[in-house]
Length: 482
Image (cartoon, rainbow, N blue to C red):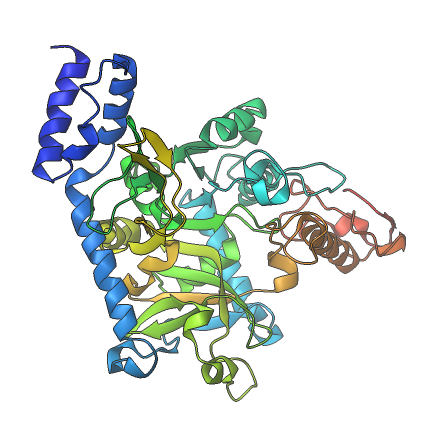
């Protein structure tokens, strides 16, 4: 038998067993080349056909549970309560700085021991920025012309040097998307991986389904598919052997974060050390909300477990609730910046992967048998299954939350240039603000265009403000790039 015949027999048997044979209906056509048919069969072979029904049923059950558990219908176990997990500490409180200094020492020790890995979610495209390519390859307009990828890679490189174990002390794992995997890997190769240890793996996809659970053909030889959400990082880590690779290297702790934060501190030793000091299996670096109406998900407790609750699920009264210090009770804003132990990832998250999908009802393009064309519907006709990276939080037994400074650690790049917030312009201002703060704290005096947003301390000069003692007593002309 040929490769095509062998694979066809295998796929046919699998599809028949799960009631999905309709997707093979066009393979008998003489107008479709065998190469096209083989490519189609190989794409099907990548799909967990035997699990789709349980994925969908679990997502539908969760959707129904949320409907019943919302508002006045909420059962006692579904009531949203303030976060009651591991201790919450803030980097903005001077009284806690000593404890955080100890945490940083603990985290640096873990880095030096080769126990910490950085994990980047880099599947996003620069479309909203007006850039045709991976978002990580975007230049926010600083003098050095560094891309988001370069900032992150060089911070990892610098951290390795600070640990005393060299540039490759912290391995950098990057999850791409099927759309940008080639461009991302080629970019890093062109830069010699910035001199660090990098490993790439693509995010997975899942087929779109009808409400009855049938896969949807977009063309005679292609299924309608979509990325499985940023929570797809967990099955992708398993599928591509990343967790095994981490274990073989002696990694014990993982710091995961998104690509669109120009100020992110990869493998942040303070955050890692803080989570270790709390004996946490999972951790979340957050920004405390500045106002009740800020539209961001927050850390809370539901069903006696830690979780992220979307802002739309919190009542006005709850959003305005404050503690004795006037701080918002539901204020720990989620910014996709997480810590995990490898044990938690391997022994708790992985065995529960099938229970974490959500229903997203969408307009799914489909192949019309009568017109022999692909139709773009005007109303929702199908379901995409997706998961979120924070869906695993309820599995945590000891979750730690660290509140950090918005001005020093969060410069999101999501909106196009010219937008007031979350844009390259606002990120550049925040980045410049941090640079100016570091050099003045080191004892330098700023002169020239001191309001400039083109001030930069490069990652190889300083990871977090250290190493600038030589600037004491000097005048630094703004704008600057050090």
